Image (tube, rainbow, N blue to C red; front, side):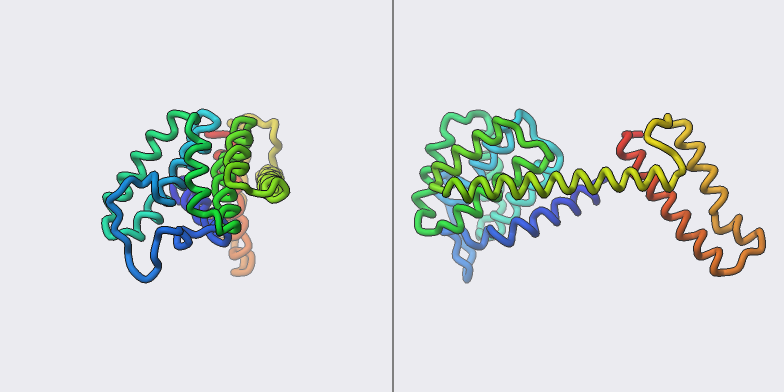
Length: 251
């Protein structure tokens, strides 16, 4: 499960990185690592993390994918500093504090705008990053929309650009959901089962198919190598289908 979560995080971070990278921080120099001992809420890095906290808690909870993404972001930001361990702990403290209230959201966003006011594309990248956090649990609540829209307005993002980003994420996750549904349908087909079968029936069908296509049993019946290879591939498909359905059913 951990590997799956990290893989999803890696894919998400790859797509985000195309539009917004921590290397683009206004206050971070590329050629040398910076040492920063001041208040990180006066620094682009700290302000970004503060806004991440607002968005992540907008729906009242932080899912596993959000938690993993936040952890990787803290590490990615802090590695640009000489005192990276100290910075990472400070970023975590900012996150813990800022997730408790939405009252200063506009104030924080306006401070970030002052730092990035000459870089519109960067500000668009920031709101795209925050929207990804909001969508990562595959749900986009009214509260999340309200918080993201307030941040977008305070960053002076064009309404059209904000709406295009929201629609892009909605389409992406709708397609992902459709693909998952198709995968599950295929999995039931492979197991010669249907979605209405109970867990016991599903397990029985699985075991029957395993016995039928197990390479050792096929080999023992005198089949040729080509048939054995086909049986091996079929058995792998059966196992993958069963694991997918078990995960969906949480069994």
